[in-house]
Length: 146
Image (cartoon, rainbow, N blue to C red; front, side, top):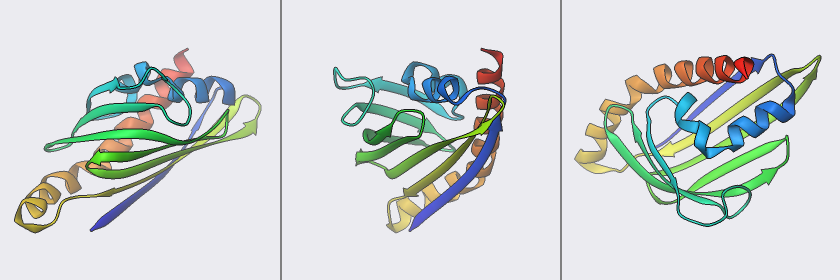
């Protein structure tokens, strides 16, 4: 079963600063709740084609290799899994003027089926809301502190 999480946050910082921070994989563990590991697996570190291996700890360890499938400077980042847990993350950035930026997150994930999938879903679902709240708060706090 596919699950979708959507969330928006406003940050008191210019869009270029917010985008650069989110686009820098070395910062991701500083704000994304549950991210235990993220490592590049290509020489390309940003933009369409860049790939990373990641591990999320959200009740259980979920592994995936993600690939950047869409990238527009100061506007859009999209990452889609190419193996492991099926997921897509789409981050859009809107300049609100006055050095304020809105970040809209759309995250879709599909957990495995069968008894193992049900057990994983039971561990993951209660953590998703907490993960989104903590990730949003950390993203705002970290970017505004730059």
